[in-house]
Length: 113
Image (cartoon, rainbow, N blue to C red):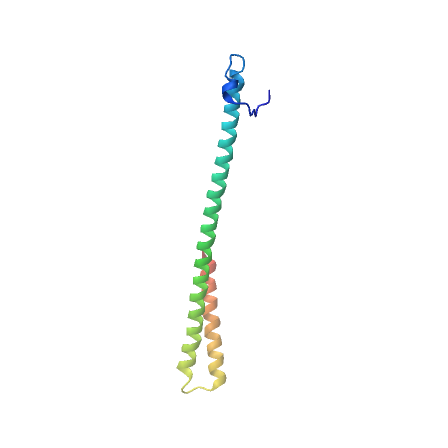
């Protein structure tokens, strides 16, 4: 008699087939338990992975947005401070230098952790 029997359980409960009946129940129960636990843990860890990935993406994008706003503010501030009395070449050089210095210090801070 095969292990995965589709015979009605009431027909299996006889003196000679009672061992097969309990073996079928045990095998089917262990199979479904293994399947459900694997299914549950797969989706649980997949959910944790997706949440951590989204958190990292949100933090990284907000940091880059903050870094971009600081860089543009630094170049605007340097432009505004020298706009009244400096020549245009000096203004553009200073704004580029301040943006470069700010981005290098930000990158240095990023690489520390």
